[in-house]
Amino acid sequence: MKYSWSLTGQFGTPVEGKDAERYLYTPIHARADGLVMGLFLAHLEVFAGDRSKRGLAGSAWPVLAAACIFLLFRKSAGGAFNYTCYALVFGSCTWFLLTPRAWLTVLDSRAFYVLSRLSFGSYLNHFYLHHPLAGLALRLLPFAEQSPLLHQLASFGFFVAASAAVAVLTFCLIESPFLRLREWLFSKWPHNQTNDHAPALERQPG
Image (cartoon, rainbow, N blue to C red):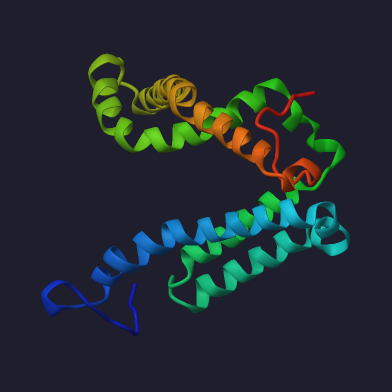
């Protein structure tokens, strides 16, 4: 990937090209673009609600438009907007799924509810789990040389199970107390006694 700009690194050393991608573009855009999209969707959901999901905004057209923009910039910008486009596509898909639809009742199931509660913890925990678990899977799981594909699938299942188990602990010990603290703080604000902007801590599955 080539960039038409450069930046000044440590001790005034110019940083460009692959170094710019590694030290500036990826650390910022891989995290900030998705965060900005999430904040934008949260703002719409809380302050606009169903009004923002009427007509074309609640249809599949935004998803199609985001996909077209992704393909356009991916071909024309040399990858400079990859993470921005990823955030746009995933954000439009998330908004589409937030709009009530008859075929989305599966999202109200208890299994999906539990997975949704553990997904964030699994994401955070995988950063420090994947290296030791990969080494453990190579030592403990059989058929690594005889059947690499079978070993890969078994390792993936082992990794998912271990991540979910740790996510249960982090949710009970860290996330849940802070969510309850958040709910308590919202309940103390006079504004939220008459305006139901703050979502409830526990959503009862259907």
